[in-house]
Picture 1 (spheres, chains in turn blue, orange):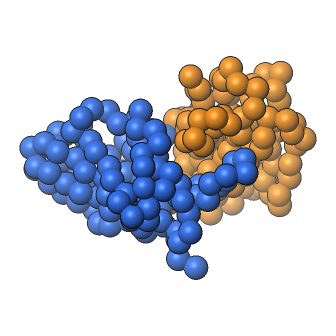
Picture 2: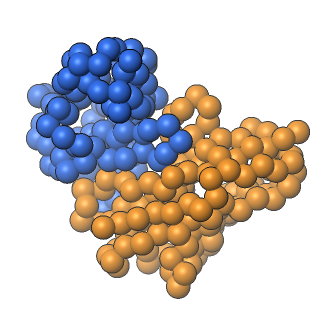
Length: 115
Length: 115
């Protein structure tokens, strides 16, 4: 079956612009996670959804970052007024929910470059 | 708060050598899960193993083995008879039971296996 997909794979933008990054989770997965991986570092948690609602957004660095999942499937991470420090690979993962821990399956990521 | 430390940022070995990747974690929770992921040059995170905090039994899967020791808060990963295809960045990660399953990753260890 299809895995987690993310689009675009690469995004180059200019400082101050607005960007949207899309994640298509595995069908049937109710939990969806966004992580950010800066060069040479491990992924860092940003936000996770349980269904349509953001269950924990404590990892979002500031109010320029926002994410939605209106129908409980596809999610969009939105970044306003991009800064050069936002350059990173943005990873999405999805999993089933409930009954203890469920494995997260990761997508290939979107590489964001802010010039 | 949780923390994962991978002190080795980069390791270089010659093919067929054994190599051990270290992972030390910190958490106050008694119920938690530990993971290892592989990130090849393509960038996608590949799940290798999950252990829960109540299961200290070591595990072997082919050339891979894992040593979990709660007494030293360590979860080390050994590759026996390394191969060039093992070259990748390896991440250790942790989640606690009531944290929404978001993963806390270490900084990663880049393994280079030379022919």
